[in-house]
Length: 420
Ligand SMILES: Nc1nc2c(ncn2[C@@H]2O[C@H](COP(=O)(O)OP(=O)(O)OP(=O)(O)O)[C@@H](O)[C@H]2O)c(=O)[nH]1
Ligand SMILES: [Mg+2]
Image (tube, helix red, strand yellow):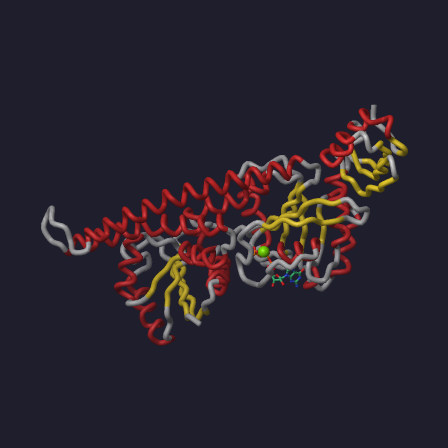
């Protein structure tokens, strides 16, 4: 396993205040990438050093620690400019990366779908391009006099052009896939089945909840960003009604700019959801700031009119669990306390989903002659068909539907109240 030294520079009061949280999260990211943290180094300094970001003394300390602990790489919490990264690598004589690159690496390891992979590749190339320029400048300085080109400059230009070509090809491929996905979403939308999307900070338990609700095996793990690509499954409620549930990528503060597009693309799904379930890790010390980050992303995505259920998760880890679940009796608050691991509170959560998604719907029994093919086929498009019984010349259907919509079908209704 690779050994990593973490470096954090706090230049403002706010950064100083958030040092512990930042370092904890960075450690989580390093572990998620498959490396081990052997040392954390912090510097408070009001001015950044343009060359190394941190002060020269700190660089010396990093070098000494790196030798002593036989570390393989140094990870900076702060973003490094291409030049800073080069200077640091030259000085430290080893691999130096920043938080953005680390997250890019994790995304690259995790992406499953074709689009996910392409989005990450695009982000990586966008990250690489200015870094190649940085190298180019450094090398051309070696070349000496004005107008002369440094060794390797021609090769770099070729690399740059190749990368730019690749970037435009990837962009084209992505837009093709996105068109297809939008089409799939539309066809799903044409039916009546509502969609709930799980959202929340990374590692809060979205996939665990997804599994317990849908009885599907999704990868859940203590690693950050275990889920990258959205997945969708059907969830059935106790009265036979059902909805689609989608599991999405976890949010994180300070997402690298290169990844914002990729990230938002995977979140396109949630814009069309009928309800969002915000999963919150109630046991995290940074619970509040995580909730704020999630709310910020929602605002950026322009989401404001979708009902949100807050699911406070991992209550099994709290000492007063039995007291906390008492709060679930008021389901109108759209706040539910759960344990996705043990299943506590899941019924209450389902009830809230039921109320939000199906509140306009009532139960109807209808009998339709088989000759009315168009009507029979139209039912699933605007109602939920719970049961269909073949009775020789008729179909007997048990459905849930909006009583207003039933006005056109009054003559077929055996049981159920219409809203005129
Ligand atoms: N004790 C306890 N642990 C939980 C609970 N829910 C999830 N976990 C654990 O929390 C960790 C993260 O769970 P995931 O379901 O992968 O979290 P996620 O939100 O999908 O994470 P990302 O996909 O990385 O954003 C795993 O180790 C789970 O076993 C819970 O209710 N109680
Ligand atoms: Mg997940």
